[in-house]
Amino acid sequence: MLKSKNQIETNKYELEIEVSPEVFEDACQKAYLKNKSKINVPGFRPGKAPRKMIETQYGEAVFYEEAVNSIYGETVEEAVHEAELILVCPPEVEVTEVGKDVGVKFKAVCTVKPTVKVGDCKGIKVTKTVNAVTDEMVDHEIGHMRERNSRSINVDDRPAQEGDDVVIDFEGFKDGVAFEGGKAEKYTLKLGSGQFIPGFEEKVVGHNIGDEFDIDVTFPEDYQAKELAGAPVVFKIKLHEIRKTEVPELDDDFVKDATDFETVDELKADVRKHLEEHAEEHAEADVESAIMEAVISKLEGEIPEVMYENKVNEMIDDLSHRLSHQGVDLKMYLQFTGMTEESLRTTYREQAEKQVKLRLALEQYAVDNKIEPTDEEIEEEYKKIAEQYNMPVDDVKKYIAAEDLKQDVAVSKAVDEIKAAAIIENA
Image (cartoon, rainbow, N blue to C red; front, side, top):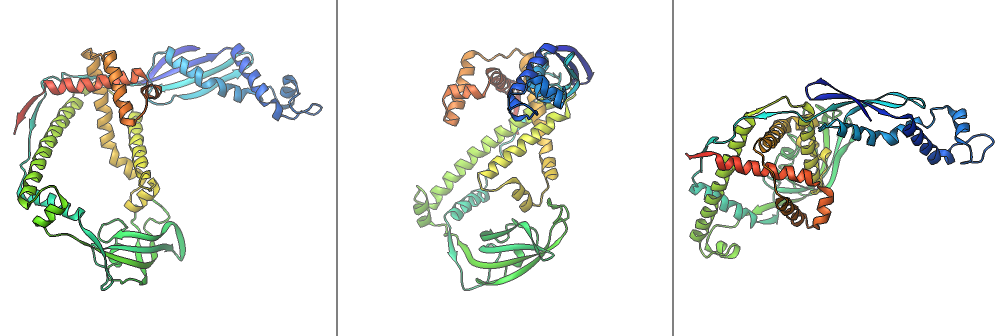
């Protein structure tokens, strides 16, 4: 049970929690019953030794650790609920006293969701700029279309050139010893893509199919793997294939083969139309972004550092998940990009701060303006999620609590309300 609740600094509370001797004794008895068959006591068959004999043999506290662990989670959770705290990270818990006569006493330091204020978000002024679509932009887009319809042709009458795709075996050595993550077979690499560390791709240029050669390069000083950072290494290479890309000419024949149009002019008109639609969508997105930036600027409050760190962790987890679908793990990604985990976290930091601040501001706006989603709106949102993930609605409800979804819908409605009240001027 919760004994006391004291604020020790902004967004931090210390809870004193007690478990009665009776509850602790029950937990110790359960720990005894669970473990007695594993404990040997002279004169008794396995599992037959009385608890008192085991405690005499191994000490009175023999079951304390497991007993405390068994009641810890639920006890702290109940105390946090009783204290009416909304945590932003797991509490730091310390056992301050334990024994048969006193039960268990905990001290939990809890970092809580901050209390914030948000200024008037109605009537935010922003400028909408729709970029004009130029002929060069149309040609550039059609260029991508031609590239998508290009052919990859094997080359055997010349050395590799920048822009070629080459298929190679490679293995890296530092001081004559192969290093982890430095080997692959039949690996396809586009020369000039910058996919490998500086100096690698340039030294494949000029070699022919069947060549076996060494590449001397030096890893960047800030390379993630410390044992390789700044180190000179040798890659042994075997070149298997060279392929060049042949892009089709832009003419009516190409248009007929690759699209639903008959002429180049028809294709260009359609591309221009889509680019103009995209320019309008981009302008709308910029407007919303500007409005949300203004909302963030109206936020007042001291935000716990851990909320930013948690958001960065979410972003890295999301990146790792997306990479896994491409058959790449995070460690390999960092190696090939020359980044460290620290530099990756720094890259995400600014975005994480904005997302945390915006969410807090919108939640507070919803509270201040009494935005309450209806039961029908909540149910509709459950259905949307179920359709998105191709799951039964009841299964979605098992994973997403109604209260959490209610807050998400309230935030979404707050965004719509703020946008509707904004003053948008065309550039």
